[in-house]
Length: 445
Image (cartoon, rainbow, N blue to C red; front, top):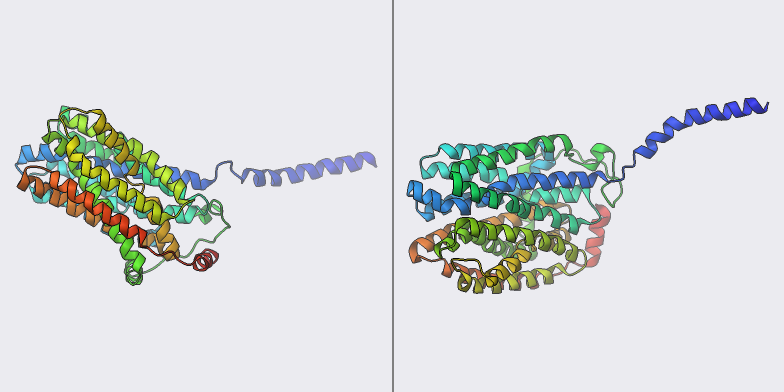
């Protein structure tokens, strides 16, 4: 009798063990959301490789083809404008077709534009390859991509993850700026363009194999939140994108966020990323040395952006923005006095200071979009990003024209410093949304 009971118990153990094991193994030590965030980080680095090129190629293209800096700046401005204008539509397309498909097509467009530029002979081709193809591709992997991933996969740590993903662009700059500067200096601009194309193509397999569109695809809840069923693919992506813009445009916070973020783009991508290297070269600095300084900005940009994400989870986003813009404006007013043939301590201080502030504005801006626009926040942020890139495009073009007309970039530095002061004021007057409205949206989401 006892032996029969023990035998039955062993049989029960054998029957229950296989069903228990999968239950234990279905709880991974690392939540899948962090893997998706890592793939997103690498993807943004690959797509951002092209952003390292324009400032390095202005002088080589001017020398080889005789194109004015205004013409070259126009191509860069088309790229930046399309980068921004594509972003809100890309966020809606990701809702319709999925993140993986949109990002793979975008990386392919960047690679095609960079490769085609190797054979260009006229400035209009530069505008098609750099402006149109690369602009559409990089715009589809813009910050709205980060916002979509963050909103779907994370409930907790959203500010921190936003900071980390925003820093990916700076990481790409850190990796590719010195490399591309060395390639341009030693082998010419064409091999550098091919390098950027290959960087975009290498990322494609990682996206296809490891990226997932929604936590429900793998039977998981978002990190730090309850399980949510995957919504049906959204139809009418373009219509929804325009509708969200029209709704947001009726609110004051949208215009204040868009205006301040336009100044953010003008004073970073449009100004420093495009014109810092040629401006430093005007003062006798070697291109590789100036590019290395931009790479150092990338290092401190990573630190500043991640720290800004941490601060955004804890402090008033409006006040953070005001401080960031005010400090940036002050630093730009001093920059013309720091230009010299060689790197010196004062210039290094500017680079470190400016790097910490470069895109520290993104986490609080995105947090304010979430606060005011709820589940449409990724698309609204895409439109706010569009304003960022329009501001960048204007300064990329006008900065080149100013250099052609005045023979110096000084007037551009001073004007951008003044604009940053106005951005700080815009941030301070954004109204807070009532706490109950925020809680209601959170409950619905």
